[in-house]
Image 1 (cartoon, rainbow, N blue to C red):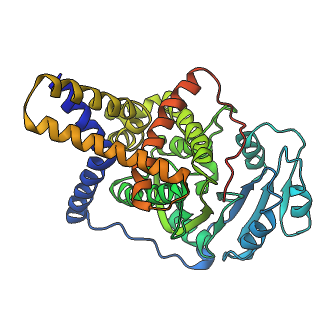
Image 2: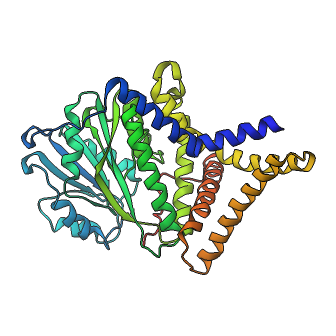
Image 3: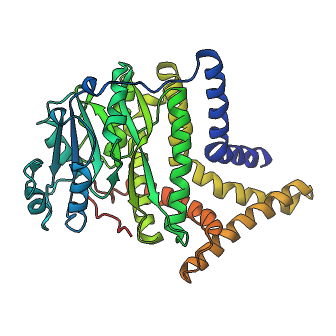
Length: 390
């Protein structure tokens, strides 16, 4: 029982903190041996040809702001195409985009899901690289230049931009929790990239070499993650570029964020099953180590082990008087009490950020369990209703 308890506790700690610590130490060692990885400096006229792809579904309230932001991006005009694809949209999104002749527009009335729309768009692209971004995010002006300069390195197959979540001082649990989560994720991605490769890219902003694009199944839930990891599986690195960032508002509330997290969790277990070869340490080495440590553990056993560690701790304290187990149980119960307090304060719309972090942590791990169940019950479609944003 004690062995199972300590094993569970170790894996939980490693998943959420230990991997970050180990990663930091490995990067420090790598710097001593090989030096720090340098950001390539590329002249503007040496940048590759690029197509920016924006998949938009019923975004009429935000799409004009997105278009204006897109047209203000810095990149050589003769090397850039901007393509909006609006398949299935039933509002004025396609009509608003059509007002701008400098934009390319693809639209069909059928809604077959985002990845089907992306496949259709990529089939018409001839540029050297493609940059994907979501319709509900805004990019910094230098985002495209900062991304595409990395393609001067032939070992790079994809680039992940940074996701930033707007969080006000009086943020609610969804804003505070999601903002903290992405700050931590960004720190891990910087270290992942310096050690070897980022483990997957998020759809808010990422880029690939066009010739490396491999279509994923139309029922893919996390298409952006799958597309980028397929490129990593071909032996190319995924670079992280924090100076290219997509900013969006947080989910409207915790319920909307939970909806999004459950979908991501269902997509996570699907991705693990589809990407089984990446679990082979003997073939993929460092990439497998990063993939399992950063993604697989979070999306599979760690949420279960959180529950198991608590139950085993209670059982051990009931039969063992050793003080250390009692203190650990008190610490666990205190953490969950703070999470419950965060839940109550959220309901009463009282804003105390420090309590929203344990609450968001519990919500996130619950979402993994719910997502796994949803996936195996075949209840998660690739086409889904977007979570409402602030």
